[in-house]
Amino acid sequence: MAALRQRCGFWVLRAAAAGLLGLPVWPDVASAQTAPLQTSPLQAPPLRIGLSEGSAPPRAGIDGDLGNGLLPDLMRMVAERLGRPAEVVPVSRKRVISALAGGQVDVLCTLAEGWIPADLRPGVVLSVPLFSEQNVVITMAPGAVVNGVPAETLADLAGTIATVRGYLYPELEEAFASGRLSRADAPDEGSALKMVARGRTRYGIVNRMTYGWSSRSVPPQEPFPVPLLLMRPEPVSCAVPAQGESREAVLEALRQIAASGRIEKAVQALRAVSR
Image (cartoon, rainbow, N blue to C red; front, top):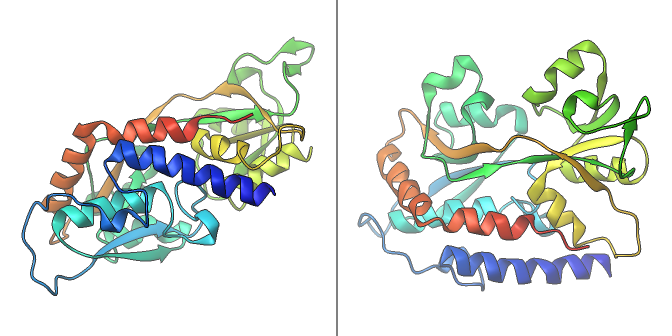
């Protein structure tokens, strides 16, 4: 029932998000009627869209299909505007930026400047910001306290926090370095959320879209982590290889999509919590 509830919830959300993005709800965004920026030959090469194999719904990986979610839909919009088919290229989480810089994929969403290792930055060009990502610290104990004092800021947190293997959390680095907080790495954000729900860690940190999505799969009578603290929003972009042949065309398509404001509205819809 939970899986059915989440699946039905997804199509309701997809209907809302598709409407906001100006896309058809069914069967997928690949059939969207968008005006191409350029005319391509009939046998135009596919636009290779890179997706991290660790991507969690609703960004990607819905129903176990990496090419199903907000980010692949967004990149298919770009392909449509270029008059090219889209090809999903799965990339391991550790190699996703190097694959982009090395030209193994043509576009990757989403990235922020601080997420790119210094040695790879010359090989990557970011688009204009598309929306803001925001993490939330969650707990099963509303009004959590540390040494008898309510936890009101990140500086108040102490103990173990569920995180995602390979993810960086700049706002928590000082707490990790001092030993006040310790990481308990999960393979993805959905698993990190479950660690908190099952009492394995006191806290967890997940993206607000993941939190909102997960809230739809748990019946109201079952326990579910509550938000404790919101992290600072961080604008994110898509990125292209610095030497990519389609660099300017892809960046222009992304600029137009961002200017419409539809992506930000779709993200807000996906963040909504259903409890």
